[in-house]
Image (tube, rainbow, N blue to C red; front, side, top):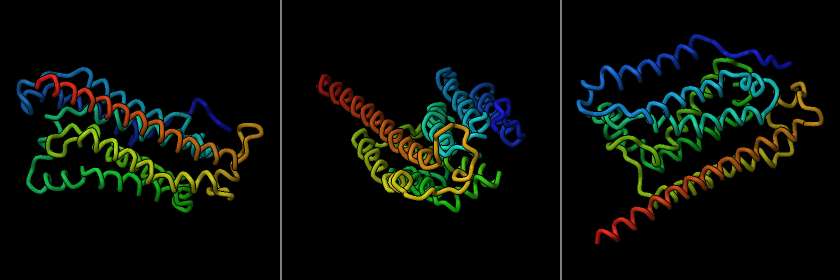
Length: 264
């Protein structure tokens, strides 16, 4: 059964997150004067970055990982949503422009960054990565093999960074798109993810054997109900996030238009 005291402390996970936190502290602290002289230290961005690391660890290092890996598809879905939404959003919000652009503004990198940061490419990468990993053979393989499971979560997080780039890009090289384009982009993501949602939610079969034969840790909660809940969480969570993103973009578009009107 579930060991609620089990928290992952593997060196590649804990060490990797500590290294990222240390690297961020060095680059935005002692080395900030060399990288971007005169730029202030922004506590809000630092808090967002470290919050992203904490949420990432809670998603994959807490007992939630054990529940999602061995017992409940819906718990695994919660993991993925934590990686896709708050962790990825806060990670991008934590990156200052002066830290990102020196990396992207290089010959050979600049063109690739602009191509990869295009909304069509970002949306395609996100939709394909999430959809392909939900193919039953791949998804169940990740549940059986620890290395593949780690790879899956890293790819989910990476795809989520692409997903949010057109909204939250900290770069002038591949900047955020217009507010109108952001709203259309979110609508496109919702449409693009609908087949996966329908596949999971309305399937008459249990798609993933691990969850079909897993011990039931909740009474009267069948694998079919678990799968239905997971698919519903995916769709409703995605719709809620997309609707919120569209509302924020519309509000900012309205503010910008009003400001321009007043200046005239």
